[in-house]
Image (cartoon, one colour):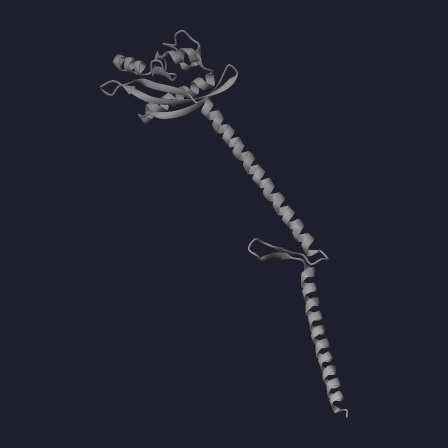
Length: 212
């Protein structure tokens, strides 16, 4: 186990990740420098979670260790805590550590500060919600303007027609139908007048032809 923990520490030497190992009694057996810096301690070996964390957080961390022990496999957790008045997010990978004979020694833990990523995700989600709200508001405004325009067209005294880019009529005022009907009446009257004029002209021509 000592060899494995030394190897673990050497692999993480100089890394920013928190690396520590807790024993079956819940006390820390080994920890790297970032752990000391995180807890602002010169040494954490022999300390339990309750010695380093608020009681609620300590109970939660211990419950996670117990879960990994029962599952007998590694598992990731995301923890949120207040540090110097600021909220920080940490992603921990916990795994059971065993002797060669499979006897449990403790729980190994590697933690990474993901505060920056978490804030970025929250900002992106906030922007997405704002965009959704803006799009919904604009859609409602366009629909309201469309209804107002349709109402103006339908009640207009002038013959108004709206045509789309393809040349199709999108909307027309009621006056359009009335005007078209009036045009049809005028055309009919014109045809009648022309027919009557033709008859009168024909009569006059016949009358002139019959005179000596």
